[in-house]
Image (cartoon, rainbow, N blue to C red; front, side, top):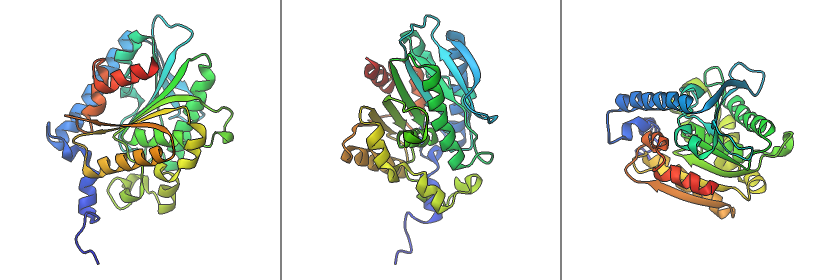
Length: 291
């Protein structure tokens, strides 16, 4: 029997507290700084782009998109859908337009997805919402030359759930060309007993059906032409790093086009914050993918 173990609640809480692993600043400061960076860059993006805010993709109050369109938009555009993190209970689309800063002048449309975070939204609802948001974008922008997904942390989990959708249940099958899953969680079972699950109130059954690592077959069918990038920060916790590596290996074993990016000198927060910079490794990789 194991009496010690990384499976103790305290150890799990530590593993799933990304702010406690940053080498740059204290746990509270790194979260505060994160929100500030994203807000400021989103404000910048709104100055650079034509914006359509609060575009509905469903009936619910939270089912809205913010769309950032280049002022010189061609009719044959690349489009990036960004799904925000915040442990399914913080942040919103309001500070999620930051990626448009380096992409707008390359003619790329950026869509920030809103969804009902906990406690208002539960996991099944959030997954359904992001899937429907992608369908709505495909319907509204039928002339795009490439659709790309990007999600950070809980948003990477939701983006991975989009990749594992059985699209036969929907009116369209999105042709997703690339997906950036950044510092994500792909197995929800370990968080059931942690503070993260308090507002989510997931049962084991809910966690199982919403864990991307359990849902590979659909992904194989719908995303064969999709290049998936699984990115993790050097200073993510060992559990976050392990989940990324395991998910990457499962995708690879399924024969998918997937690459793993272990991004040096980053933590859970600046790995995505740096995407406001056109010279940052992941931004360049995304632009290269778009050709």
